Length: 191
Length: 249
Image 1 (spheres, each protein chain N blue to C red):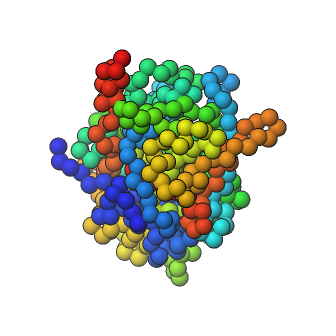
Image 2 (image 1 turned 90 degrees about the vertical axis):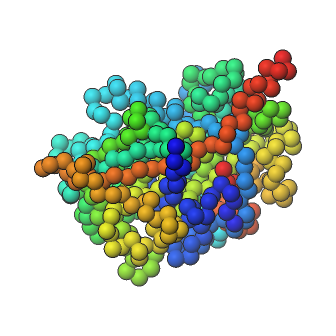
Image 3 (image 1 turned 120 degrees about the vertical axis):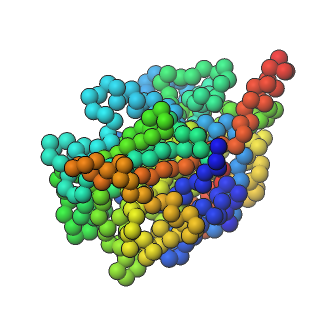
């Protein structure tokens, strides 16, 4: 087969809501979903510290047993019929977004190592010519210290990937802000 | 600043000063290359396509791929009716079947149905401006819509976006995710547009649909062809993992 040149990305622009959010997609759980209920919330900020009101956050995660709903995950950990693992949330005028989901289980890194629980995160916005790729880890997870991905991130920048555990009204909230540029800039990856 | 996962001959830089909004939004720290683990070689594409497929079979309508009628008013949208079709492929040229495509666009007058679009141009009561479809078993998709209008924006004096349709695809893995814009051949606004120009010159043609007379339907609509090539995951690290697991049992 001939190698094909990739189609280049372009910005999502400011008018994506009808196309990408025709209905809300920020509640990943139903009453039947297995696992610890968590709320992810935070703000997206630009290089001036101003809220980004036209960003879109997408997440992809394993279920509570650490299994991805995808044909490439052929392990024996059970699928949850009440969980897909994909969510999407737009930011409001304060740059704020939220998602209701469950804490994911651990998944393998390679043949011998395991990853700490994490969400895979994309950020889209006007002014982003390509989406940004990052991860969300949980700041109260002891296994973070051994996570092979966190370990390649320079230590001073690792906290930008850690969602902060809070409780409000008996609910578990992980606060995860995304700083596109400048002081406290979130770590972004290439895949 | 960009790592090996973003080939500079294809990808626009995050910071492209002619597009003003990039100056406060482009990251300044180096991007960190991430190996393709199970998290990256999986992705929501198959599950989302499956869910839509079930919805489509349950509903009378064929997907949501006809933007000239999907407002549901019973009256067709105003504008030059077009058919946009093409194949979705991976880098090896393999067609990607059952792949979800989401699109959105301005109406024929260059106006989006969106609360922040202040362009002084009419909304079309019969045009929603977004839809979605799946590729078939040969990786082919087909959309019916109207040619979007150009519209002004605030980036620089007398700035106009060339006519374009936004495309969003998931592909087979997290790595494959693509959001892009499809442009039309012969549009004089393209060389003036910093968003289009942010893509390296040699790669810009990949964003322009080709007029396709074989797609054009007599007495009905003009045809355009736009193929899309998605990044795939590296050689799967997962088989060795399974093998190793079995070996240690």
